[in-house]
Image (cartoon, rainbow, N blue to C red; front, side, top):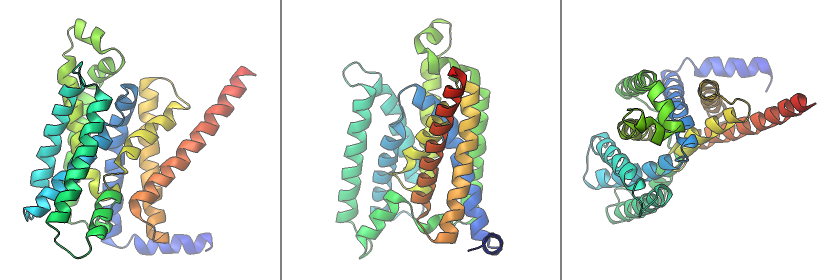
Length: 287
């Protein structure tokens, strides 16, 4: 396919409302994920996204068994509550953060799959599970209400991050010192947990529960290959995440590949490019 044909194809698809909606939602989710990703990676709490995504999977299974018309009414509060509990348990000397995440992740995934088997609503159970875990085509069938819901949540997430930026910065690098200087570290950790829970629930339709952590981890790790300051890493992470999401959506639409897996693959390619750029930059500086 020539470049002219490619642009013609993209122009044709972008006349479709569902493509524009998918692009908007993907960019908003990528933006929110990247904002939180830097803090979570630096606090060595990267896999909280993975644990909460499995909680959301279990909640979706329960919502399906209860025949709820809008599973967000159950999935969102359950995920938020588990985020708070995970934070509390993770600070317990008897159960460290990584062990708590592993327990919740494996437990809710198993319970969710068991419930989906016991209360199967369709003959294609494997397809339903695969779509939930790895993302479904529902990202291309978004309604006006879903897009506005995602936009409002994204505005709230970005606003909270900007309002509490300096507090989040302090808690990220030295939580004990922050608490000693009067910053309520537990409160801001709680805010972070709630925000990431909201992002996880919104991102389920985009990449599925198994791939959500990639949106949180890869952009942050990519930015850290080149930049060092918290502000620079955060800005670069956001730009990288949004760019990879947009490119992934375009490739998925044109090539007919799975949306979630395509976006994550583009994130991996971006990480490789940043690693190469960081290596070349260090060689030039040392020379």
